[in-house]
Image (tube, rainbow, N blue to C red; front, top):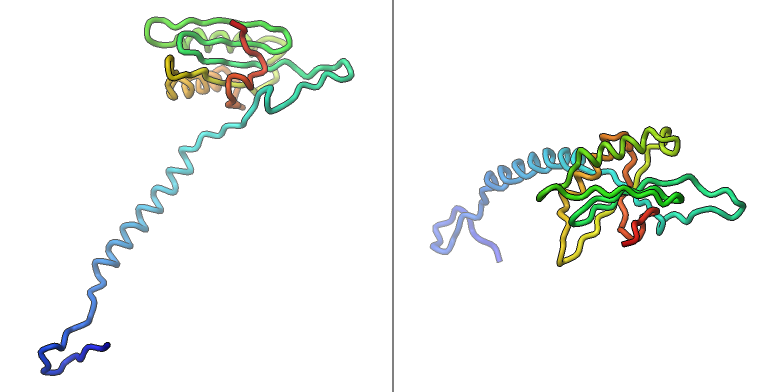
Length: 168
């Protein structure tokens, strides 16, 4: 079915489409895509899954792997543990917030020890439930604190996957 253009027929219609608004929309969307693509790549958090559930300890011939440092964020406290030696540091909440200064101090102390002087890896997990949740921002704060203390290779895992877990 075609339309007659330029005839005197009353049914004749002008079928030219105005594509200027479409071009304007596409140029705006292209600019938006280019700008957001850069920011999405910049805002990525580089995490590496770590933990006892991901890497099995090697102790077959009497030489066990090196101890690992673990941080467990719970709703009312933060635990810092060293695997193989079962050394745990408990840092309770102060009021409504975690004491990230003490956590950083404890991590720096571990960084100075012979176990972790030349290591940069650490495992971080949060034990969050519906009854007692741990905010996502607190997990990120724990990861940032670990990076400030010198552990730049932060691995995120579940609480059961930590190499050192406190038994309550």
